[in-house]
Length: 226
Image (cartoon, rainbow, N blue to C red):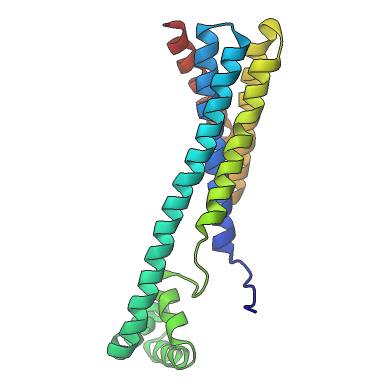
């Protein structure tokens, strides 16, 4: 039985990145449809069906997009590994020079860099060159299924709160509750994305809230045209 490999930080961050993007798209696309339809009609069932349909479409679209994107990246990484596998056989000196230059660029003396390169290529040649030249961990390829599932689920979750607020809040309270739902979910996604990217949470949260409110305003006026 093959031993299960622990995920690298890059693999975990890729899954989280897909989730954050999915959440953001889920919020904005669902809110856009909800607000446009609600501005054009007061029929709650029509608003609900339109919002739910868009929620499902957005979730599956984001999941499929992430699967295709990450699959392409995975194929590219595998192709790079195979290329380096052949170069180690046909141009070992060139690979040795590439690893040596990598350590020299880090400020290590040429003599020490050459010694490090020779030692690494003697012990783990393929693992060393793919890490040095492509920053790829041998055997740790990004998983398209993880990214797809993360994006699909998060897109669905991102749009649920605005959908519930718009379709189940009675009377005139539905508009302020929907706007509040947009602000809360947008702020949460902004906070998570900032923490993942070592950014400023306050700036990210404010930026997302403003984008969410602009989305509401644009789609409201579009709905009022019809």
